[in-house]
Amino acid sequence: MSEPKLSPETIAISAGRPPITKDGSLNPNISLSSTFHAGGELGYGRSGNETWSALESAISELEGGQTLAFASGNAAISAVFHLLPIGAPVVASDQGYSGCMAMLHSFQESGRLEVRFVDIANTDAVIAAMNGAAFLWLESPTNPGLEVADMPTLIVAARNLSVGVGVDNTFATPLIQNPLAMGADIVMHSVTKYFAGHSDVIMGSLSTKMPALHSRLHEIRKIHGGIPGPYEAWLALRGLRTFPLRFEKAQENALELAKRLSKHPGVSRVRYPGLPEDSQHDRAKSFMRGFGAVVSFEVKDGPEKAERICENSKLITHATSLGGIESLWERRRRWPAESTLTPENLIRFSVGCENVEDLWRDVEQAFANS
Image (cartoon, rainbow, N blue to C red; front, side, top):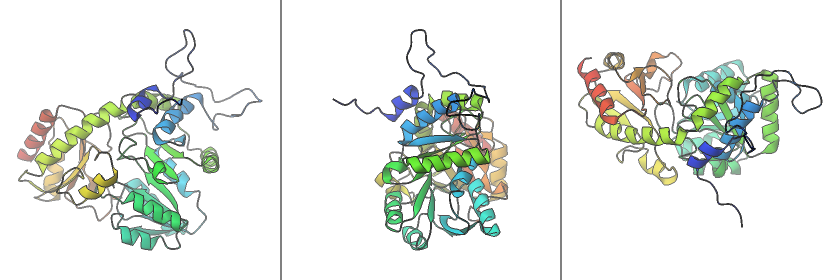
């Protein structure tokens, strides 16, 4: 009789542990060696590390594929695009994570890739753009517009067109969706965000079910040097232990705050797929198991007012990033690399695990004092 499959909540706590031995450590050690005796598989510290392996093992079990840890989310994304030949056509969202968009624009300008930017929520447009393409890069929900791609339909369409598929699953996490199980080739995470969860680590990861693809990505990581530090990997794994608890609480808070913001007189629009009136709600509900912990909203009185609101918060931290245990917000267009399709007055609110009433009082006072 086979062992029952563990839930993600249990996997996050139990995976990546050392073998059980008498008086053995419950947690993996931090391996600080860059040099190894000859005769083994590693050879040198750029090829592997025991602490990376523990983290990679845990993420592998959550995403259902072999995982490689990288120095950052951007390093992981770069490794994916380095799989492609010069000039390869790539389909990607016309609004999404600014680091990825800046990278794609630079590849396009240099001729490294031919990038076809599309509205990722427009399924027909995405499928049309995939004709003759080599790769589809999906980010869903998008950052910060929270547009939802019809992932099951698009992945099947990509398969039929012999187009590879990579998915940035940072916002949704494996608690909400599992792209590899849908047929995607690669799943990327900014481990910095929900997995590590404490705003103290920069790291990324890639997961795939294909051993040959894993080997190619491993070689790219080794050659290009996008390796994580062992201490950072240890911190990320420690953060992963509480990831389901943090995410569920943050998601619960996000839904409540989205409901209240939608009724606030100073807000012209709330973007959150968990709201029944949101344009993305029905699609998200059809295949996602939740709606995430990021709420984006547009301030009625314009970008200057939005900026002042972020500056006047006392509990919510005015900072970039997301996915930490603490709440963060910012006006995204303050960054030059942000997509021009993102409204100037949009605030991205990464909702944390604080008491929801405390958060709402801070929202109200920030509006009132701005």
